[in-house]
Every structure is written in C-alpha cells, then in structure tokens.
Length: 305
Image 1 (cartoon, rainbow, N blue to C red):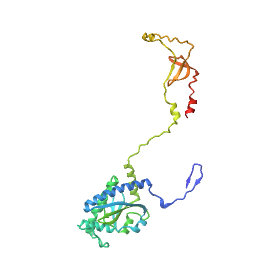
Image 2 (image 1 turned 90 degrees about the horizontal axis):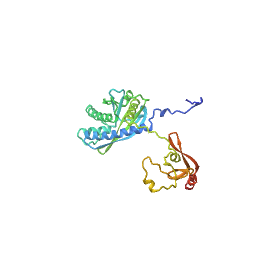
Image 3 (image 1 turned 180 degrees about the horizontal axis):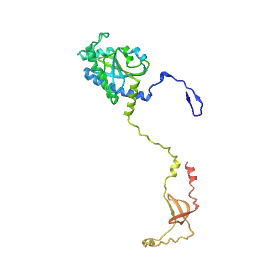
Image 4 (image 1 turned 90 degrees about the vertical axis):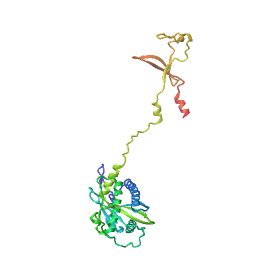
C-alpha cells in the first residue's frame, strides 16, 4: 500500500513470486561475465584433459531450491568461499563426470556404463577438475577475499544444509561439448552471494561521465547574438590626392562637407540610420536620426523566407 502526496491511498497488486528478481541490466551483465568464464574454462579444461572441448552458457534462472531439485544433476560439490559466508554449488551430470574421468586416466572419453558409482579415487581426481572450475570463476568474478575450495561431494537431499529450501537461488547452466558428446554443469548461487557478485560487477564497470546538456536556442536567437561590423561614415566624400599626400601626424584634413549633412550608420557595409557624431563622456558616439530607406530588412526577410 502506498500513500500519495494528496493523502489518498492507492493499492497495487503484488506478485511475491517476482520479488528479488534481477533487473534486465544486471542479468545481461552477469550473462556477459559468465560468457567470458565459459571461454576461459574451455581453455583451461582443454589443457587438463588434453582434448578440444567447448563450454557455453545456456540458461540463467532464479528459482527456489525446492523447485530446482526436480531436475538437479547427480554429482554435487559445495565450494567454500574463503572469508565470505555461504557456499557456491557446482552440479555436474554424471555422464560429463565419467567422460572427464576416462580422459584423465588415459582413455578416449567413451562412456558406456552411466549408472556406476564413483570410487574415492574418482572423487579425488574430480576434485582437481572442480577446483579448476572454481579458480576460473574467481578470475571472472574479481571479488576481494574470495578463495573457493572444493569440498567432498554431497547427495541431493543434503543441499538444504547449504541453501534454505524456500530461498531463491540463481542457477547458471553451462553446456559442454566433449569428444563428440554433450554434457552440462550448473553453478548455483544463494541470494546473499548473488548480491555480492552484482555489487562487485558494478564496481568493476567504468563510471560513465555525466554530460550536461542544455537546450539549443532557436536559430533566430543565435543569429541575434552574432557580432557585426558597425561604423559611422560620411559617404560620398571626395578628397584631393594632394591633400592625402600632405597628411602628417597632427594634420587636420578638411572634408569640405556642410555641418548640416548627416553621416550614416552602416552594418556590414549597409546603411541603416542617419547619424551625427557626438560625444558620450570620454567616448565618441553616433546619434541616430531617421531610418535609411535602404534598411528595410523585414520586407527582404519575408521575400527570402
């Protein structure tokens, strides 16, 4: 329920299933981070398994642990977060685990019995693979104090010890193409760690400089602010060449124009007003008279417009 400024109450329906959902911007940023993580992990696994493979981010979902447990892969390893509280969960389908184990023990990666149980030796070998995934995730996330350590595998029914059943979690699913076959694994984040990851991602992004913009003045107003050469002149005067040649500093040039004859104020070599010379304090000035008949700019503007 929300109260507005006028004092009246407005009621809006609330969808509790959508609470805590990521914004589109945060979801895109996290997807971009894990696209890079997938490429770097493929390179690292290629070196460890001595075979080419491809890792791609497939989906990014938010749901409760209770809903997630319906289709969860069978090989589950919690990762401790060093100085941070909580755990990140790695979930691998058993087919992918068996293919990796066969390659690491010198085989071709061909899996026939997908229902076999893993031995303690198998789990110790896979611990190195899970730790490699953790190291690549650390490099992608850039979270200070994060140092993930792979723990022993757990069963599906033990997940509630790491994530409350009704708490919303983030599940990133990755597809893996390996020796002509496909597999998948998930990274599962509890809500607290997801918030830390989003916050760190925003800190890593370059801050955009705020650009102030002001409305552009109309072209007429901008033209009116332009500067123009203005002068007060006595047009039509003629002076003998000998008088000009005789000029020296301090000389007075007789213009032979009647004092009653006004000059003109010109702008851009165009006459606008009649003008006579005056003085305004210590400054020379021109006192305007009647408008020049040639200065009908408004009528010309209407003709050109």
